[in-house]
Amino acid sequence: MGVGKWIAAVVLASSFAAAAQPVQPHVTALVGATVVDVDSGRETPDAAVLIEDGRIVRIGPRATVAVPPGARIRSMTGKWLIPGLMNMHVHLGLKLPGAAGAALVGETDPQEVLRMAGNARRSLLSGVTTVRLVGEDHGNDFALRAEIDRGEVIGPRIKTAGGDHRPDRRAWLARGGRSLRARPGGSRADQAGRGLDQDRDLRRHRRQSRRHLGGAHDGRGAVDADRGHPP
Image 1 (spheres, helix red, strand yellow):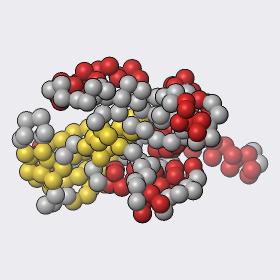
Image 2 (tube, helix red, strand yellow):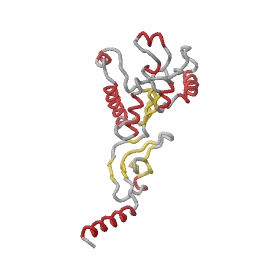
Image 3 (cartoon, one colour):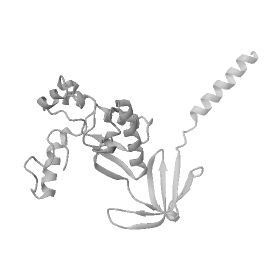
Image 4 (cartoon, rainbow, N blue to C red):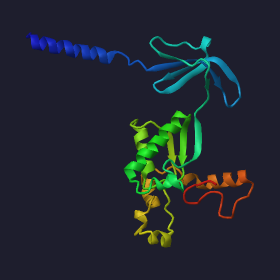
């Protein structure tokens, strides 16, 4: 056997041997924090939290949790751990009146998506792991969610109600709009095809909001019938 064929055979054999080895999960252990169980209110001091391939697999007192060899250990002594927070009313691309909004006049969609990505990152780093978007422009929420899901952008899990699609035709035409397809959110069918999260839950949201408000709403309904927009 020639040297080249011999080297190729060794490389091939090594590849098969590597493939036969079980893939070891990536494990991180957070140790020393106080973990709060928000269901019971119980606190577990000096706890250990095992995270395997991005998922929490075990929580308990450090003395009872076996940390596997090779795990990445991060000391959390003096800190408190709670479940991720959920923000149910979010506009990542919000443009406020006044100086803040004036500074964004002429903002393009790519610029807005980048600004939304920055807001999403700050939300996650502040402990918010799920956000419910209740109105964004031009499908930018769908674009951002796709990049977060692919791991290209750091941000919370996004549930979105899409953009405004109501046929407020006179005002829309006065602003230069020509068709519903060109509106800020696009037609509902267009948005549904891109993965709209909330249409199926609107009636339930309305019932819950009215119940929580005790019927004290303004007659228009506690939830926007098109976007699931709560008060």
